[in-house]
Length: 220
Image (cartoon, rainbow, N blue to C red; front, top):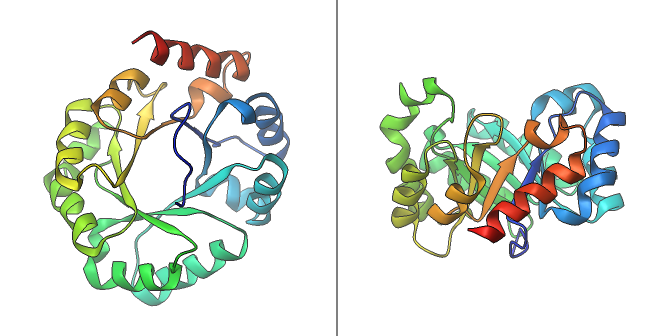
């Protein structure tokens, strides 16, 4: 629907420092990955239009990992802005609540999928977000949005959250690669897409890095 059926199961986190490096990395990898994810730093530096350029040039599905987390009027404006540049999926925090999520879903219509962040992947994610991750997964099913983010650093949690949201929701898993999460373990636990950033774009050969990840999954 919003994302194509996974082939490589790899979503590239394009947390590169600038436009030049972004295009260099994608020139090497675009044909081996399923989608590309943007976070705030690159967009704050280069502007939203880089999303449109990359989508048109590489024909990739695009996820805006903006972790939307405000009152409905502000959230809705963010959705309208990313809709203009062709974003396919937006990641939002579950703690904004069901009313805000329902408004986002309405604004997004059938053009943008909503993914709820359940749990942050670093150690601090266990302090607060872990306490509510299952509730956020339940919220995904309750408001019937596209899917959830689950921590690739904790495959047991991915498996647990998959059981909650069921087989039809999309799960994307952050923290794979540089943060220590295993690509194969995250996918085997139920993630549709493993989000991989530094382990690819900081590698001497980003293309070779992607190929190696794909080999590991095939060998499992």
